[in-house]
Image 1 (cartoon, rainbow over the protein chains, first blue to last red):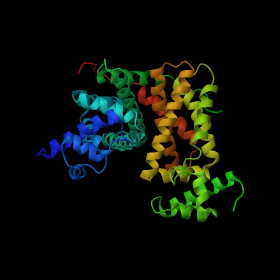
Image 2 (image 1 turned 30 degrees about the vertical axis):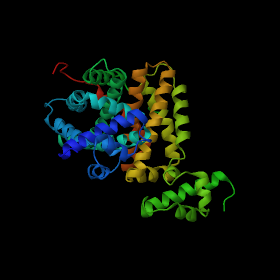
Image 3 (image 1 turned 90 degrees about the horizontal axis):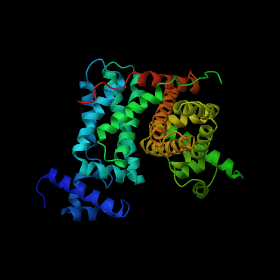
Length: 194
Length: 194
């Protein structure tokens, strides 16, 4: 049995991810996750409230990192440029943990219960980034819109990375933000009166 | 007791919305919703699987309407222009049902359990819109990105409408898509090598 709490958490996360991939989230119990990790089930619940949260352990760190990167981004960038900076740094963390982060994203994408939790985490994260932009004096409405559309673009890039892992996440991120630029460049619409 | 199924559904939705506003979602039971609607609780469960779904009854209609509008949008529009067209039509439906749709959005925004369900519905809707764009020969990657960022922009506009109901939803939609245009107009970023 691992002595350190951090090591126990890491083993539980790895075991959960393996089991969700092998037999699916719905057919995996917390007892099985604990057994695979060589840890007893009571210890599982000391670390995680349920079998969804075990895959979202890094979320608070990710949020803190993104907020910090928004604060630290160079002066003179536009709001989406600031967010792209922040996502690229976060992307490096995901890339470095790829043996875990890539199958994790794939399992989430195909499991409705995990997808729902992921969306809720994303919404909280978006709110934190909007607040970080406001602290850089981006007007509230633009900060909110930039955070929502920037997060949607990041999410799109992460999915593209899962589908095409031959390219690094960073390349998918640059591509996605360039594509957003292309999409939004034409005047939005036409007819303001219809 | 209302005879028609449609009338029963409408009354259950209205009763649920009232109770969620008065005492909050968590402290409202399906029995109370049924009682307020003058309907017995078993009938509630013939119409809705749970007390979350009662507020999402219109989602299938909205999805169908948006997909149809994407198909029917004029030729020559760019992907985000097509989506804006579709959202404006959908927005008219929300505006016409404002006595229901506006407090509904407000209750969802402040209730985590409803927000989570709303996010999942939004993700399904985004996927349907991306598919509709692909059927108009928008390349798959751009269709997905446009649907995600377009939906984020629609969501932002709907929130702005709740916060500032003095302006119609349509005005908020045009403003939001114009703001996205402004945000995404500068080249995304700078440094491709760092």
